Image (cartoon, rainbow, N blue to C red; front, side, top):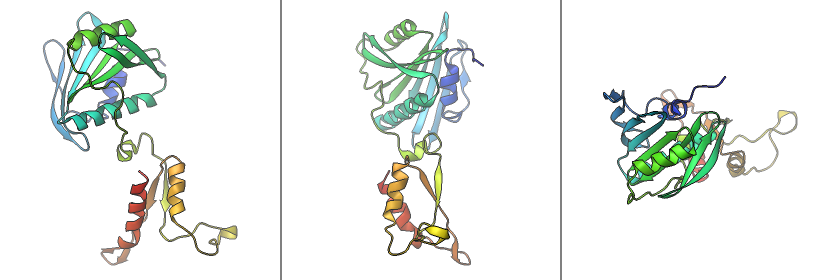
Length: 234
């Protein structure tokens, strides 16, 4: 089944932080949508506006305003990371008057690109590369300082928990792996190799049982070293 591209709203709208990036939009008479400021975990306070381009139902510009440049860097990195996980998405760099634009083609739908200018992140959508190039050049002034159109920083693991690191292991501190006939292996065991294995397996998560040591008293001390060891691998 193919979805109708209009204008890559399947890609962009679904990504608007899973529908929670902004509060309910205010629709203006020209069809644009304005998203009032909202504070988000990790991203800080963001606001935005999505503008449709007259005469081109497949073109739009989503403008996202962040509270700082580091937050804008994070938002750009996360968007591009999520976009790259979708099927049918491939890099399609474009040469523009502003330099090379790291665009992506979405099979059967169109093209999309993102750019960071200071604290603002723009997401452009269009039917093809020519339309995207024209939209990009007309939206940003000729003297605009474009900081990046590719990710500048890695996405923290906790923001990719469900997107890239969904698989997790149950982990019991101080329990040795099983040997033959379900017996623990003999001799000393270095538990730090457990974390190296989790890292090599794709940065999978560890689910640690936290049981009460006494009624109403949680045993955190015996597990604190597990959290610290895991943090060092992230």
